[in-house]
Length: 344
Image (tube, rainbow, N blue to C red):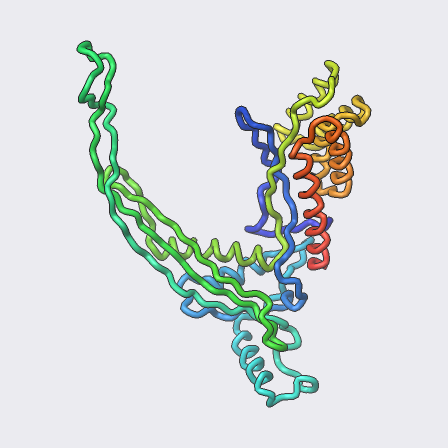
């Protein structure tokens, strides 16, 4: 699998979550293909956006310029200064005044699509209200005369204000040769900061907050138009589905411990020993081994092991996590194939 290196889009990998009283979980990465399955998006120009007081188009250009596969940029971005010339040529072409089959137009031969957009609004509002606080240092009613247990504490109200910020933008990608819209999306990001009189909350300048909301829009937009990795939370099985001997119990426990400490390769070896020891008759062992293969993006091997675990589980008690894993891997294999075609 081609490794995708996306700066600012790279997801955190290998995070292990062990929650008290809950099943153990591991976070793995899965590739998500671009929503635009048209190769013309690779050679692109970015026009200055309308009403862009938050540098949205500049942030998008910088982010797109950092999307790479094996050290090669996914997007070939034309010089911003050429965008207006390209747009003029597109209008001229649409007018029918030039023969595009014979006329050599500046920019069009190297640029296949163009990003245009508009910041529809940046909005800031306030709404005030009172919040009730409890003063646990002041008791106004005790349960008995000895004043050992407080029944009612003093309550008071403080004045608070919500500072509400919102940014709304529409971004479009069009194919230059025929003005076909390849992608169009409206993005709206909001943030609320509460400030009360009894708190020392520092609020940044509205322009700074609007710019940060614009960066969130940038992230969502670029992750829509380029393949990227997403985090998926996968449950690990820690219940013995068949009678384990002492050695097998230790293998299961140690395999999960290795995962907890992010030693995936070591845990894979341990779970393989457990599968061998149980003669491939434990769905728990097969499932956890499959998880390690899925972690390393060996989806075909993971799929085989998950299906073996399912075949065993239907003879006893079906674990819903096994069914979810089979469906997840099937979808991820499909997405992987689509993303590879887009990358190549």
